Length: 230
Image (cartoon, rainbow, N blue to C red; front, side, top):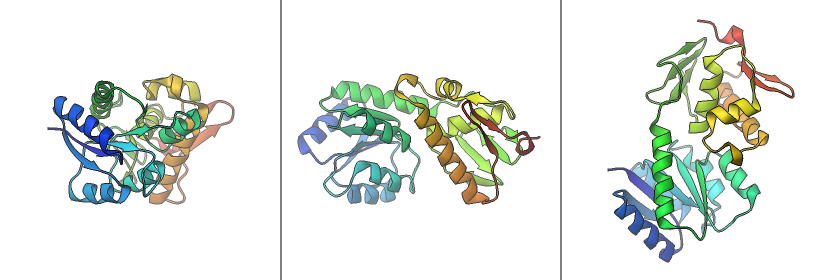
């Protein structure tokens, strides 16, 4: 049974969500603080995390950065903040969905199911595709660079494999948005740029001299052909 970790400090909301998760046939763990969540993840992994932004001991956005050091499982933000900037920040950090309070518990469970289906579905890229120094394992949703796994979020994975699949082709930001996101209306050019920046940083963690992604100013991005032969 799929395990969901709920990180929410308001007991009444937590009880409502936990009941809805039980009805949806999910196993669940509940933590009221960020530190407790990190300890819970270290003890027992979860397949998805529902994360409140306003926790008593930390900001949910900051907590996600620490969570990403442990796991790349999907994260749904749960928050009373409805500002668009906050939503964009959450998505840029690697969040997979953003639910604003007050919300329907049934809708939240439906969104959990949708995110889990997306995360388990292999993107349209060749199985174990080779592209120069890159190796794509689309069954495990992993990309290896120079033999080392890149710790990518789901959307970073989708963006990078899109580029790997057509080395040399310049993908516009709009094209990347339409092909990598299910709800393009919520995403901006800034989001695409932030994901590319994160991908580049993770590649340089493996090889500081590597720069396989080309920026075409005013248009978009491409994987350099010289880094994509084979």
